[in-house]
Amino acid sequence: MNDTHERIRRAADTAGSAVFGLGRWGRGSGVVVAPGLALAAPHRRGPRPHHHGPHGHGPFGHRGPRGPHHDDERGLIAVFPGGTAVEAEAAGIDPATGLTVLRLDTSGITPVTAATGEPRIGDPVLALGNPGGRGLRVTPGYIASEPRPLEGPGGRPGAAGIEHTAPLPRGASGGPLLDAGGALLGVNLIRPGWGLILAVATGADIAARAAAVATGDVPRPRTLGVALAPSHVARRLRRAVGLPEADGVLVRAVDDGSPAQAAGLGDGDLITAAGGAPVTDIPALARAIDATPADGRLVLSVLRGTELREVVVDLAATPVA
Image (tube, rainbow, N blue to C red; front, top):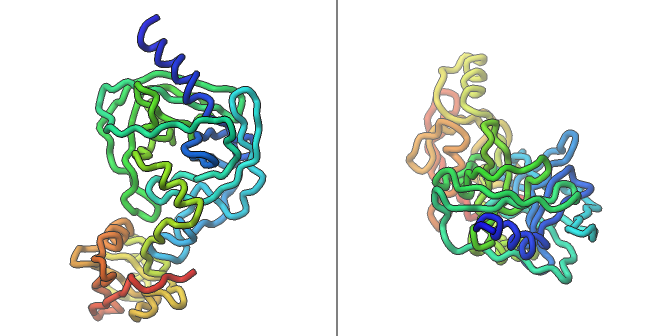
C-alpha cells in the first residue's frame, strides 16, 4: 500500500467521523472542530433574504453584505457517516473566515485537530466531504499556490485562501481540507471553473474562535453606520444633478445613533479619502476602517456638493444594535 492510500484510509478512520452533511440546508457539508461545535459553508436553495454582516452589521452598518447564515434558518439536520442524524443550530459567523458556526450534539465524535504549520506549494492534502449526508468522500491532492488573502464581507481583508487539486463532488462545500497528518488546514468553499478547489484557511485557533462565536464573545467590528453607493454609481448620480464628477463612494443613508450621524455625515456626501488614503471604492474604505487607531478616530475627506470638508468620526462609539 503506497503512502497516498495510507493517508486516505487514515483520514477516513479518524477525521472522517467528524464530517457531516446538511440534510435540510442545500447539499453542503460540515466538520466538527470542538465539542458541540462545527463549521459549515452551506448554500441554501432559492433566494436569500437580506443579511447585515457578522452580528448584524458590516463595516458600514447599514444594508451590509449578505452571508451564509440567516436569522430564519432553523431545523438544520447534520447527518454523520453511518446515518446518525442530529439537530443543528446556526450560532453565528466566524468573522475571521466568514464560515457558519453550528451548535449540535457531538457525543462520541472526536473533533478534528487544527494544523499548526503553514501550507506550502506541493504539500499533499486530503479533501473530505459528506454531500447531503449521503456518505463520506475523501480525495487526495496537493497545494497548488501560496495562500492568498480573500476579500471578506464589505471588502474587508479576509482569511487566506488555499488553492489545491483535490477534486470534490457537488455538495462537499463546507468539508475540511486536511494536511498529510490529518490536521485541519481549512474548509473547502468553491470550485472554480478551471478545476481547482479553493479552501479558506481556518487557523490554529479555530476551536477557540468557534466557541467565542457560540457564546457571543466575538468583538463587534467597527462600523460607520451608512449605506454606500460605489464610485461608478456616485459619478452617475452627481452628474445627473449637475455636480462635477469625483472619485469616492457616496453616502446613500445614515443610521440613527451611528458614528456617521454623530460626525455629521449625511445623504449625498461623497467620501473621497479616509485616514489619509484615497477612497476609490468600497473595499478601500473598509480597509481604512479596519486600520483605524485604537482611539477609534478616523478622519474622512468628504465632498458635500462642491465643498470639500474634513470630518472626524469616532468609531469607538457604540454601534447601532
